[in-house]
Length: 126
Image (cartoon, rainbow, N blue to C red; front, side, top):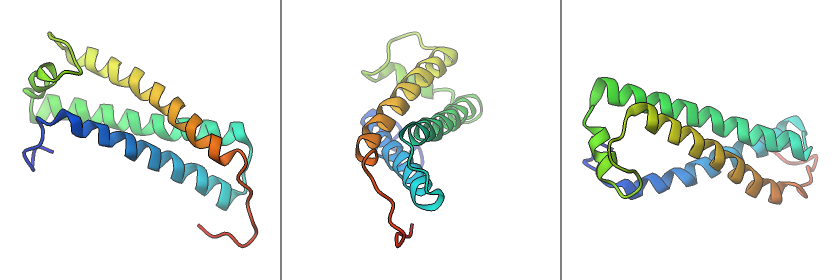
């Protein structure tokens, strides 16, 4: 976002929700269609696992960004309405991990409400 000058627009972080839903949806659908795996709990855990991997990579990216590219990003986070004052990188990492895990479970649960009755036909292709 820094390339486009949008690093100050914290509302763009809501776009992350769409990416999370798309990634989980794609993982579950691929598992159902290609692996013919239609067990609810198996696909639910797959959705959570997929999203947690994405959260871990996001946190790693944040750590690298703050440590090596722009340490002033913490100031931008402090000025947004989502975070408090006196932020430290470990505090932000912890908060992102908790938020990411919670959104992983919620998004996986939402999508599994659709896929719990989803039937695989023999003619389906991904």
